Image (cartoon, rainbow, N blue to C red; front, side, top):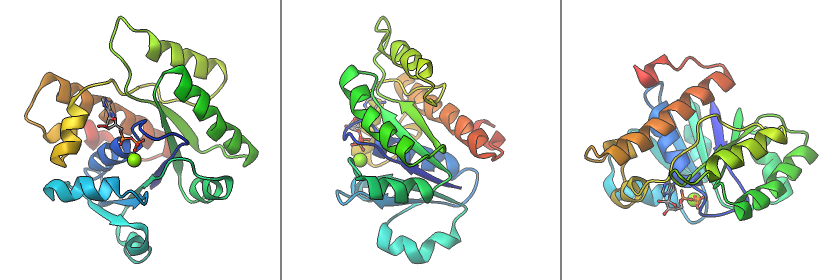
Length: 210
Ligand SMILES: Nc1ncnc2c1ncn2[C@@H]1O[C@H](COP(=O)(O)OP(=O)(O)O)[C@@H](O)[C@H]1O
Ligand SMILES: [Mg+2]
């Protein structure tokens, strides 16, 4: 399957999402993460430890190598223009649009959603990320607003935890960090999103949680 992570805003967890999902998909089949962001954040993440369980490569390398893999995850730069977004959404099974639950980010995401509507795209789903812990209700409120507007959104969101910053700094998956409760709950959120993802594209996912 081909999964693309995209959106108008930077800093909403696109690269983190691409890395964590690629880690989960690698348990289901050979997986390659294609870094489509000129900033090369995913490539740099991988270089820090050289211990990720999947390949990370740039788009130019990917043209030749992609056919070897069962699953491709594409990380992208923020703010694709309409033509780029058309290319992205037509080239994947599912486009994931991460957003934080604050009103500024949700407002920014509407641009992406309008563009997808214009393109008549149906294969996308919003992922709420960096959700502040209770007693904040920001995550729930954002989900309710999205559902109320009939926008497809992953049931599970990704909670805010410093473990993701540690994982990025160390160049590993959050699940590879020495077990802290924060790292475990961060890994769990992405596992559940992977299950939703697999059922959205019709792929059996039992081994993710086995
Ligand atoms: N669930 C999370 N909790 C806390 N920090 C996060 C979470 N997801 C991402 N981050 C941090 O937020 C920042 C932006 O994330 P990143 O994945 O690089 O976003 P993008 O690719 O959209 O620019 C990074 O410092 C990252 O470690
Ligand atoms: Mg990024």
